[in-house]
Image 1 (cartoon, rainbow, N blue to C red):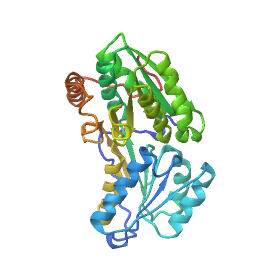
Image 2 (cartoon, rainbow, N blue to C red):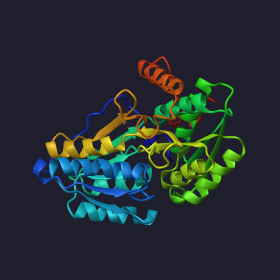
Image 3 (spheres, rainbow, N blue to C red):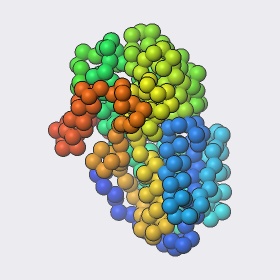
Amino acid sequence: MFGRKFYLLTTALIAGSLVTAASAADVKPAVIYDLGGKFDKSFNEGVFNGATKFSKETGVPFRDLEIQNDAQREQVLRKFAKDGFSPILMPGFAWATALGKIAEEFPNTKFAIIDAVVDKPNVQSMVFKAEESSFLVGVIAAETSKTGKVGFVGGMDIPLISAFECGYAQGVKYAKGSDEVIANMTGTTPAAWNDPVKGGELAKSQIDRGADIVYAAAGATGQGVLKAAADAGKYGIGVDSDQDNLFPGHVLTSALKRVDIATYESFKAAKDGTWKGGVEVFGLKNGGVGFAQDEWNKSILSPEALKAADAAKADIISGKITVHDYMSDNKCPV
């Protein structure tokens, strides 16, 4: 279900129809978060930050809502559309089915979705090359590890998260071919995004098996992973938002997925009257993904690891390194 049809990666915005029913003056933006909550310190919170930046800069308020379960998706989305919100942005592939239906019912409403492609003229689909940022933090992990073993804890066991794992493993093997990646997924239901206790248990198990760095791509569950690494005196790697400050001195870096930029740009385009439906891809080339460098990790991110990651980044952008896209075939080459 979550195969290529929902993640049609392109290299540029595919031209779509302008939704002209509402003028720029009528923009009434809204965000409906995915499970895991607004303040997950990761994916959802990045979207909140982007919407907040837009609101502060333009003076245009936005409405947001946190759903509590999957059954609410269609009902809540229809209510927002009936109430005149536009654009309505939803982070998370799990919104795709409900959005496909509601977008047809409200053809003059602008919708945006992150991490899925919904092929409707009034839907803006934003997808990210998470494998590229994951590759870079994999390089950093391999260059930093003392044990030759690093860990990965994913959230829900789906191809989207396997793409993070695969990119990470490729980066580790590129930097240190003999290093081992120990990987676990948290669960098979949406509850996997909000289970920091289990995330911590999985991280501790990986550390007990020799991993001295654990990368979390698991929404709010990742906070438990990072805490377990810090408690053990090891390093964690954050995801989506810059999580380096959560456990200073113990978060080596974060694989950035700039959903804040995507959200801001979608809302700004709606206000400016330039909003278009279609697919937009965010990768290293356009600054949509990357890794964190800041005051929180500058003392633990070694010059050697940073140099290796910067070199890999340049080679990915130039095409010298090709990071395999797990979503293209649901296979990982390493």
